[in-house]
Length: 316
Image 1: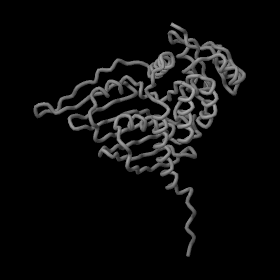
Image 2: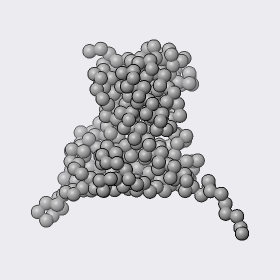
Image 3: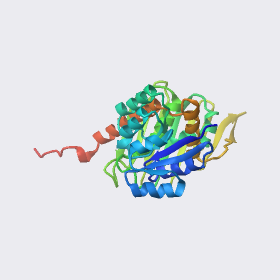
Image 4: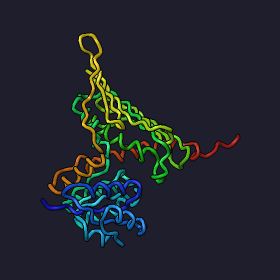
């Protein structure tokens, strides 16, 4: 089997783990690293292998596939350049800064016969995969994602940084058009919102309530799903879950059987397979664009209600 030549653009706090995993995957060789900070590219290459490149042109000449883990505002430019060179890409979430750019990336990938996968890593969480097997027509979802202040991704608020994971999963699980969004959020330590809550209603009657914060002391990543015959709960962080069912007049608790694994390793291994075999990825550019569009809608609603951006009321 042909060895896939992989590279990473932007080996920062997230991208460096892409480099690590590519260097470990079978039938894959980490051959190139590109960063605007040459010293950082050299540091990562010395640890995990590959050539530290001086330009995207040099980088593209060496690789078959690449992860793009640069700041969000550069995803469209970098992604378009590499897709037009015929390179298969995994672009970290959010796919871009706006929906038009996201759809353009998807179209460019299709035109150039390239695989475009987007890094919504929770779709590769073994717990979610196990839970999905028990899912049937969800009616209400409660989603909580809390984390300490990250000191990264400061170019975006918590909705685009953190909640977007759950928005993509929500659209995947419910599979019905959104008919209303009611969002609130506040900035605490950042220019954009650091904590947000949103209630989303779907055309099929399903309702979802999501809370995201990046100023929590503890990490919490949970989803609770209510459907007609059961209550399902998943802890993403522990990759554990359970189901409550009514059985002969009593509530019965069942543990969800989960084969644990590293989500990023599973995500990149799947990407390599998709690129090698021409298989559609689990999260395509268009699916990522839909999640981004919903996240932007939520962000705009929060921004429009921000009292800091409203003109003060003048005395009569």
